Image (tube, rainbow, N blue to C red; front, top):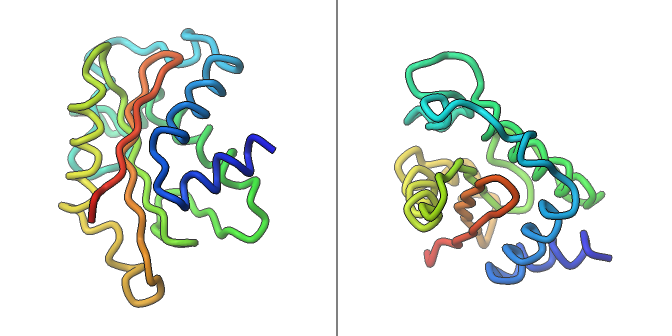
Length: 149
């Protein structure tokens, strides 16, 4: 039931409810040790890949949250969920790792990246509505912003 509510809140642009549900899920399921990485490796490259700034290997913190979201969204049998490819029901999500109290900055950066990299472009011909979410995660907490456009 909670997964259904989460997915419906995503479709409805109900950022507050998605954030509340995702925070509840993180609080119940993960350890802060799951996301531990040395600070210099927590930033993303401008390419939007889940990699560490200046490195070619994946950023474990971003990859961890990314994997959680893919698992949650995979619950919807009629949704086509594809990692790192903008397809499906018209929802584009960019996940960032945020240092404590930097949630808003990281969410805005994620939304800017969606626009700059034109992630939604491949959906424009197929989807009537495209929802764009920036999610910032830190330990067991997240913040979520939805694009106004």
